[in-house]
Picture 1: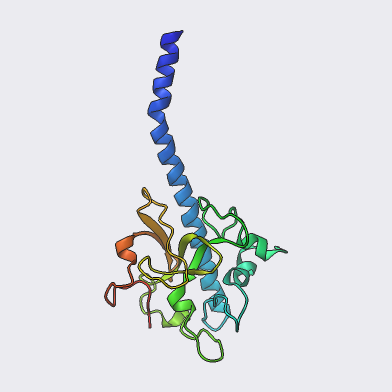
Picture 2: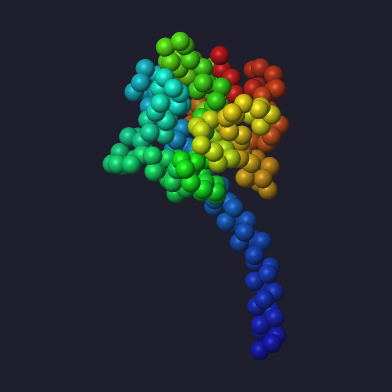
Length: 203
């Protein structure tokens, strides 16, 4: 009996790393799926709105981008604000610790979303202006926060830094303007990368 218990304990201890790795892969797959859905909703929104992706919140346009995408993702939803910060909704990645108070874990590319004209229209955030859709970030996972932006890890603006949760916390998931998702390292996400390889700018 003691030998059987010892063998069973050994087998369990040997399987734990594999179980943890499988759980991490499943979580990353779910997070990637959420980002792909959000990118697809942005593309559909642009097709319906003069090729403009959703703006982010601003004093002149105080509606979050998540609420603008609600009809494409949750057409029967009655409370978009609760979905926006729901850890189980498509608007967040499943392993982010959101807390409360409207905190989110996915943000728009701050450089694109914040460019506007004097009348508050986000004229640069248009799908037809993107020269390399497969190389330009549209949105990505961030450390949980109250605003809607994601920006490079080496920038000190008020927006959110990428949430490095993948591959032993060395990579962050980013969705691109063509709808695909990649896990990128800190070096790949730096704002100092030269053009045209910088993934944050397209104008």
